[in-house]
Image (cartoon, rainbow, N blue to C red):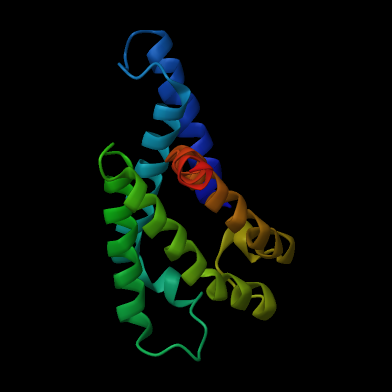
Length: 157
């Protein structure tokens, strides 16, 4: 949920920068895609900077939690970079959507176990709101990468 908030704020900042000539991207969708890429890169880097925060989210039944934290961080960074490149945006979006689905069990674990993640993330309401927001984020990635146009074109044939 926090990531989605960061994405929206970044997209608005990039769009405002475009209005003042500080950003060559005038299209909101391009700015939204860049903001989404930046947010995923930032989140991915945080897996390496503060892995202990992610450790608290790991369900105990998953093997090699530290490896999984680093692996998901790598995929977030690569997906974020790929999303900002037109030629790789489609594959990056698919990869990020798969990643968001793969980490969904950790979000369920956090909500069910009331994991103490710090600050406002300790509140059960926040933890439960993260669950539907994961699907909003998936929809956002889908929209930013314009996958729906490709899907529609392939299914009209």
